[in-house]
Image: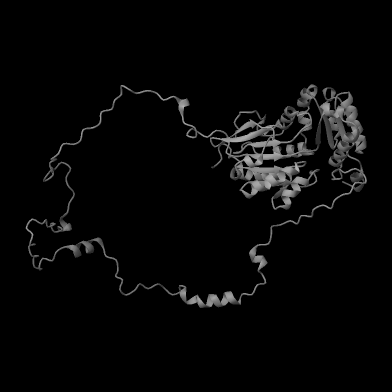
Length: 442
């Protein structure tokens, strides 16, 4: 790309039905200083026209009337050359005044690839400069420390260590004997005098050990020389009473003794402004099977979470569902959480329940869970995420040009948590919880 091409405004296509929402989006795109190359109703758009224009970004006003058209355009919209920006048509139509200007600034930042989302004249706080790499190890901290003390201690202990010479057995140790030698040593000497008869005539004297050289296997057909007779009758076997058998009701299993219900832990994805695009990239990079569920918490104006489920289901290899109260949290699924959806651990597995405060990170099992903070995540979730990390959870934050509201993600990264693009965060989750495909070696 030449310098002149880099200075040109990005080409953008607007897909929306005629009406107030389309007018508001057009005004926002004009304020964002982009080149509007196409403005069309999705129902009337030919996919070849969109591909031929090759815009850098496509802004789509979502509403139930265009869902069928978007499914028809799915192949064209799935091109990696397009940056997709979704907006709710109902919200766009109501947006006025400073809300329109604020949304236009975030839209401009996304389309132009910068982070300037504050109004003109606002003070810009100095960005936190994060240095790459891990903290210094103890060896690096003491690289210039004197070693004389340790060398003297090693000289004093040198005589206590094993040398390089061959091992010699002590003189009092004898070579190991064979079985024949050990048995012969225990046989009585024929020339020796017989032992005296013990004073107690009733004492039992063990017989001498016979010569093992005359031992032979016993013929199976030959009867034994002597058979010991049983002097007492064997105890009677218990009688099994089959007249009072009955089936046990499966529902009478005591609590806590049945099989585990739901997943043991979960990966919580927190997002906000700029989150749909980051979430789309995260889900698209996941494998088709995971041993952990993903719980997506992204507040939406108007609570149109059903549309978000449909958007993400187009790119996610995992099933995307809307979380329902009372349902089990199953592994290998992506759940979109509403404002009041929370989780509870019952019988070793997670289930959804309804609470006014919504999802609480502190209620997740830390050793089996993870937290990912994408663009726009709530700053109030930083402390709970770091507390969960101290208890054993994995925590990561989004970085890079696509993170338009990095405050919360930057805070966890500054605390030493994992940092990466959405695709890199997905790779980290896959490395820990990816389930082998059928036919692969376990």
